[in-house]
Length: 340
Ligand SMILES: Cc1cc2nc3c(=O)[nH]c(=O)nc-3n(C[C@H](O)[C@H](O)[C@H](O)COP(=O)(O)O)c2cc1C
Image (cartoon, rainbow, N blue to C red; front, side, top):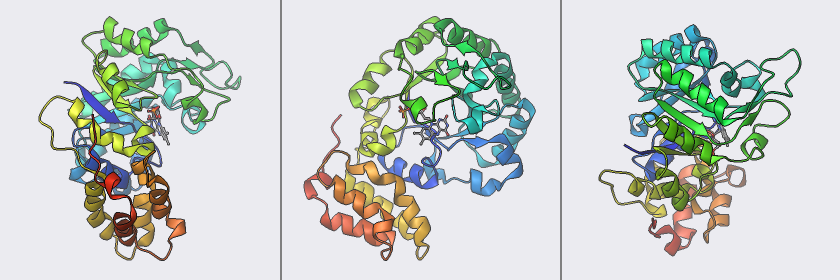
């Protein structure tokens, strides 16, 4: 069965954002932010792992490189009932790849295969991997690893086959390489060109695998196009830059679909959520932070952004902000139906 996912994004896909997102789409798979295995072992687990059942289905994304430590972290997370576990093998951030986690793991397919098979020993939940189509490690410091260039289709195919042979069945592939040194994470999401055809080719070469494509997908038309080639589409930045797009995705997937919500309904349904934080204005405003794109390129966009920017309204509660938005935003945009 095909699927649409909302990508794991640090500082974006927290509990509040996932709750908001779930008001727009009932079917999409949601992700946590990336959480390192050592944070789960040594950090505040409740804070890191708690989620509301309303957010389901939800995938926990883990970053790490030590198979036993990752397995320990997954064992702990079993108490939280995530729907799936995903390994991050695509993040180029120095903080991550500098420790041989994230995208640099693509240089070590056997290690990744071991991580994933150790993971499967401790959970019955599906274990998936999110990678790039390749890596360029040629500019990493001489003493650092991996100093390799793995940017050919054959390198990706070898990576996928190595994991497949050890039992991995579900791949999410960001269709650009990661440059491991010299680019910021942001530039690494924009500068290396997208090569969707490599991901399509993986699906053709390994038709039994579940292959999800990611990178630069921002419209209903492009989602449809990709779903003709692969099993799933993962949406990253567009999920917060153009949140209303998400109200259209359920209709693209099999199964019965509830009527898509209007922006008014989304805001009305988000009201009780922010109201529960009462006088804790900081948390409530934080909950509004990643909703800025709800009116993307529509009349009212500027007003909405001003309203939900807490620094402009330190005296108002988040609930008051949303009520004001319902009074002041253009009715025809609040009540606009998502057209697929
Ligand atoms: C703010 C931000 C944070 C991100 N954090 C993560 C992360 O924690 N784990 C991960 O695998 N990818 C992370 N990514 C990458 C996205 O999951 C996705 O692969 C990337 O943005 C490309 O998809 P897009 O073009 O649809 O945005 C992040 C992206 C952004 C914009």
